[in-house]
Each structure stands twice: as structure tokens, then as C-alpha cells.
Image (tube, rainbow, N blue to C red; front, top):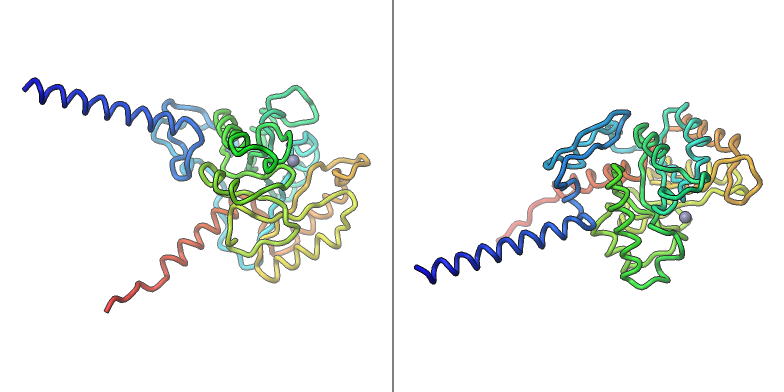
Length: 304
Ligand SMILES: [Zn+2]
């Protein structure tokens, strides 16, 4: 009896230890599919409302605008890097006039910093509430992740997601700083994101073959709108996905700043076309839905 009791105690201790290991693992970067596992209720701001998520809530239960039907005429995503405050002040109101939303790729250190040139928590909450996506663009943006050790890069990837989620942002996607990316980073990122965008200057096939190396096309102060329209038309014609990358929308002379009048012209053009303007997350959700359908439609292997 004594022997049985002590092995029962050992079993209990082992189970307790295993449980603790699982809890510690979940406390770090969350694996796809386990998002939303929280030990305490928390408040999330989305769609203009506050939502209390309890211990069993998942991110998929968050309110969101209904996804458009599977695209027939291509997708366009407006993606804004680094979290400049002119995105909130200038790009956001212009896009709102036409009912369009975008993806703001923010750097954790800037969100928590003092610099008024960058959006802080309140502006980002307002964007998310209006249907924008908040994506991670690393912790520090100090240098390309490809020039860091894997453990440093892993920290930039996982901590930024963890910290932004702790503030109530529904972060599911990553954008690589300096467009520097490789296969090792993609593997690491797949543990805590659903997609990663990283350079390329070309369109994405739809659905994309690799969600962890999505391509974007940069738009700068010197980029003629005609060349952007060419990409838009190509996406529309071939039912492809175009991610347009911006930094700033502002009327100052800098390579990174797209003048507000030109930005408005582009938004008007997109509004007039048949392409769907979606966030990176929405395009990924649509692509994942399509992939599931394709798998479901595949004929079962007949064994003879
Ligand atoms: Zn950047």
C-alpha cells in the first residue's frame, strides 16, 4: 500500500510538472491554433467596442467585419511600416472616407516610446476599432533580423507579438524589418504568426504558395501612380494579391513620404475598381479557407 501510495504521489508530481511546462510554454509566444489561451479575463478593443475575453475565449471569437467572398478580381492590401503617426493623422481619414482599411506594422519600442512621430497605444486602439489590422514589425527594428543570431531574432519575433497582444492587439501577422528574411526565420515565425511579408517587389499568386514569405511592392515619393495602377490592374486581371508597402503619407519632401493628394488619388482609384481591399490578415484568412476547400475536394485515395 505504502509503495502504491508513493508511486501515486510521484505520478501526481509528474503530472503537475507536465502541466507547469505546458503553462510556461503557453505564456511565451503562442502557437497557431492556441491563440487566446489566457489565464485571466482581459479587455480587447475591436470594432468600436470593448470585449471581455474569458479564459476560454479564442481570437476567432473576436468580432470582425465579415470577410468578403473569395476574390474573383484580385486583392490589394495597403500596408504601412514602422507606425508613423501620419498614418493615423492622414492615411486613416482618407481611407475611412472610402470605407477602406489597412495594416499598420508597428515596432514595439516605438509604441511604448515617447516620440510623437510614432503612433502610440491610443491611436492604434482607434485603428483596430475601425477595422484596421495591427501587425508586428519587431521589438526594436534596430537591424535586419538576418544579421542577428537566431536567438536574438527569435526574441524580436516572439516578444513583439506577446507584448502587443498583452495590450489587447489582435496580432497574427509579421512584417520583416528592412525586408530581410530567410527560411530559418520563416520556420521560427510560423510558431507565432499566420503570415509574414518580406519584400519582393512583385505580386503574390492567390492563394499564396508560402504564407511566410509574402511579397510586397514599395510605394515611395518618387513612385509614379501609373506604375502602381499597373500592378493593381494585373492583380485584378489575374486574380492575384498585391500588397502595397508605404511608410508615411505626408506633405514633406522625403523619399519615404507619399504626398496626401497622390495617396487620395490612389485610394479613389482602388475604390473605383473591382479589386477587394483587405488587410493582410483578411487575405490570409480567405486563402486558408480556400486551401481547406481544396483539401476537402481532393478525391480520397482508393486502395485496391
Ligand atoms: Zn520598417
